[in-house]
Image (cartoon, rainbow, N blue to C red):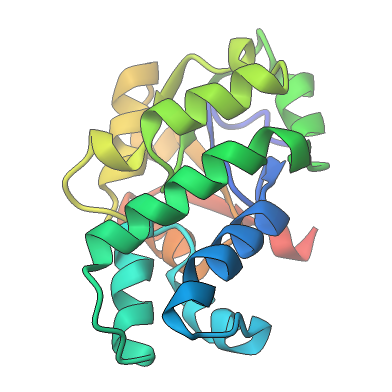
Length: 191
């Protein structure tokens, strides 16, 4: 189905790895001492930031709830909690079948809003790292999704022209980033 592309680029969280439970649990744990009860609907409204680095989501939370807290510190606390619980809760999602099918036949990369080290840890834990020629995390680029920088860097690292790449994404910002990078995309929410 993707034979016409030379490069396959995958978002990670929510696309090839199910990390939602761990992220929700971490936010719940970090927000509780601030007197904020985790609200799935409120988080769904902020979820438009999927693909953004944690500090940007933390900034949105501090603004929404008028929290007198440093967004960078809040993000660091949330990341620490996620790191403690994540490996026990993650599992691969069905899109991993595409990865396995094209392994060795197409250049493949991960382009994620997670930090590079976290992406490497998760991929290795699930035995998926060897499938990918490159990993680009939030700390590898200055401009994040919906800007195209993450995916353009992936294409460069796997030595494939952007127009010959297809991006697999689960978030609107990621799809917009693929468009801006002049890449085809698959919205995995519709699969």
